[in-house]
Image (cartoon, rainbow, N blue to C red; front, side, top):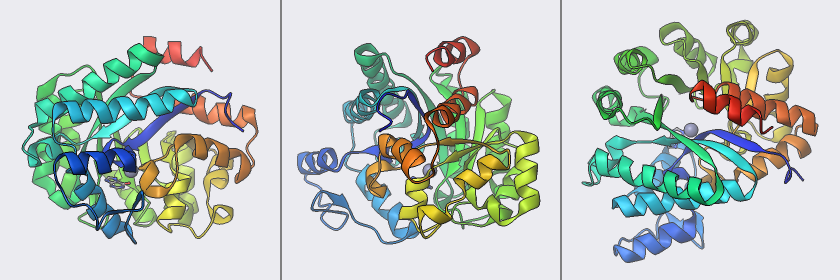
Length: 322
Ligand code: HPA
Ligand code: ZN
């Protein structure tokens, strides 16, 4: 349906994009038992906490820099195949450390995957380093310090993900100060598992250019107006929200209401195979479930490019392709 439309994605967790077949092959290669988390070609979880556990376990079957190059190249090739021209991947150097690979080798593998995909299809990509709340504020500060030290031109953003119910944004403020000081674009997961207060917290404490999800801002009309006034861009992931039961169905999902209230919105797939979705499906849903015209969908894409964490030359080149 949306095959001929150009696409961009601002919110996708790299390990969350791992095709189940690839994860299974990796598990076999390293003789790791993932049968509890991957059954019949499907990732197994039942709520947000068990999703995070499943995500962390599956991430452990990617162990070497080459594994990360392959994972990155595979996902970006899939995106390019459906007309995507730009992708921001959320990556966790801390995860590289935890699995014993090291943050540098982890990031180097991912960057190699980006180079291979760009060469094959022309797709542009950048990296958003993330801290995960459930590993604690020190690990989040460590992620920001890594990003500052790495001085890698493909690392252009900083995010806070993980268990949203753990701590308040203020507990992680220092990490955002470090990231802001080195000029990274800032975005925060908020208003997904937790209510509107978490979006207000993010604005009060960090004032990021973008918010991951943010959709539960709809519970507070003054907050919706504040987002519209500030021009904060929401990285909306409808398929993820329905899979995690943030809203019961697409009819009650607030994407259209937020857009009509003047909030700048974009669409992404979050952790696509975990949530039985893909960027292509999210674009198709924009039409079939939300009733957006092709011109309106192009506007979502344009907003994504305007809000992308890239240099101006790349931004203009991308905008020229829509
Ligand atoms: N949400 C929050 N934290 C995460 C996710 C997600 O979808 N994937 C990996 N960490
Ligand atoms: Zn996310």
